[in-house]
Length: 212
Image (cartoon, rainbow, N blue to C red; front, side, top):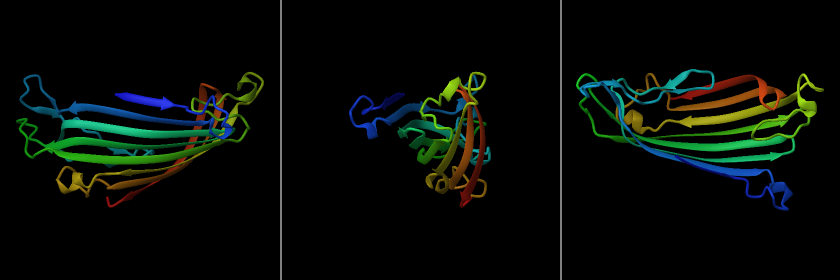
């Protein structure tokens, strides 16, 4: 796992770019299904399922699918803040080698297939009470609730998309009957920051599923 995060203009004279932060994360590994102690049967696929922000599962692999091979993920990220306003944008690509197998015998049924799922999101917020926004949270003027103020109130908006690789369906690793090919989400919320470390959040999200 490697991660690089930087604020290249934080100490420069370019005031408009002082709030710009960029980063990227990369991870690589070898995955395999979980087997019993004798290594004769498969007990778990070691594959994920995917859910919407509201907790609805919109994609799961077939019952015979298992992880078996290389896994590579990378995620570039951008964060920008200007006074009370901020925006976060990120993209994720996750490639996993998957095959079908007989759980009772542990034997492979098909060749490995590289499956690449992608997702992105853009989230923006504005502090209605006037405090500066920040990646690590908001410090309410007056010290927060219980000090000399009532905390900070922030309005947030988010849009995101999750795309399932068609290879998962065309190779029999998942079914369009039970899983979606795409999930589109829009959300709005309000955060009440009691202090820099504690907040109360209220969110509303709507997710549309495509071809599932």
